[in-house]
Length: 438
Ligand code: NAP
Ligand code: HSE
Image 1 (cartoon, helix red, strand yellow):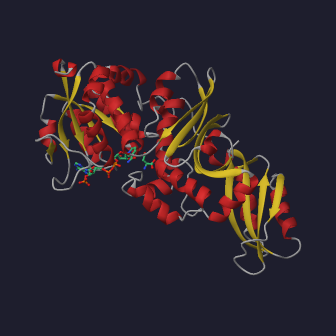
Image 2 (cartoon, rainbow, N blue to C red):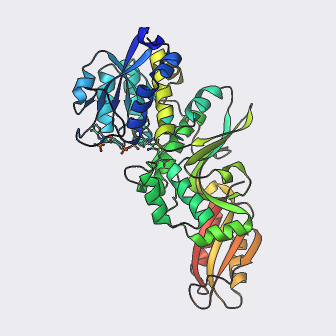
Image 3 (cartoon, rainbow, N blue to C red):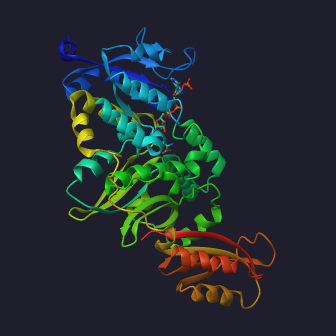
């Protein structure tokens, strides 16, 4: 008889048996002794709620566990904690409220829901004396929520910069290393279970912005409306920029960053150039990473798989254990997440963000065009660090790509200069702009 069979049991439910839900069930069922050892009690999977009972599932469940009746789980008093692993906003929000109202603590991986309805859900949980744990909602298997909100709590975090979307990092890594095709690589990421049900959320920067809003709340005490974070995704990136970036010694990565500045908290999600050899530039495939600077600890760096079944399930099950043990309830009550009146910092204007820039223009091969570009940049106070005129990859006769790297400038200055240059007839297109991560 195993040691855990003698132990007290905590009933656990799962709602949503897709990629993550099946991974959580597998860890609970295949490694019950391990979770019991860490929780000091047996985590007993009683109900796994799905929409469609006939759909094949990625895990063998004991008889009677699979159900399409959420009410059975809600009404079962032996279940005290539920992993809510349905994506999107509805019915995920209503299910979460129903679970809290029935007295269950909730663990979730749904960052879209928390970024959109965090205040409502957290207020409701507090009112009902319940808790919500959400380690898996940001950066998959990396324990970044616990690190930022607990382990670094002696610090004022000054800045965060990270790769927060596994699907995007998988795609840009393959475009950079193999010249892979964007659409085919996105399909591969979906096949591997990395992407959201609607992968537009991944590739247009929405998912990374939602995760950044959660991290910004934990690190800086700002209640951020994720939709106000300036964001751009990786859809629309062109292979030619991966090539030019590499010639300059950089890789292109989708970076989410937050910085405390004199103007307030500066937030941004966009593809950026990261110097080859810097830790973030070497984060590949479905891996995520977060670098943070704390005023006491200095720089720290976390890396791990940010998407995928078992890395995400690892974070969910750790939350189930913490909740069963009672640790979540203590931190949940202490942190007062998303509570009214807790904004410690305002947001900086997006135009005030200072960076070096990579700018690519497609210009006509005629005299004076470089002078016109330099003139518009100079007029807006932007110094040029280097200019590269590429005579390869001519898409149209007589058009040449010119790449300019600027010195540090504000986003608003760059926007003003590029708006002027759009009207110059010798400039075929202002084809691309990336910030350079320093
Ligand atoms: P998924 O594979 O699409 O699974 C979602 C599951 O929810 C599906 O099985 C779906 O049922 C089920 N569902 C939908 N509505 C339901 C309802 N009313 N009642 C019961 N079940 C319902 O998604 P996933 O990749 O596991 O992601 C789940 C959550 O984790 C999302 O919030 C996602 O953002 C987050 N997350 C995912 C990853 C990852 O790598 N995949 C990583 C971190 C966080 P059917 O099977 O019948 O369609
Ligand atoms: N779709 C998300 C990603 C899952 O690719 O990062 C992890 O949150």
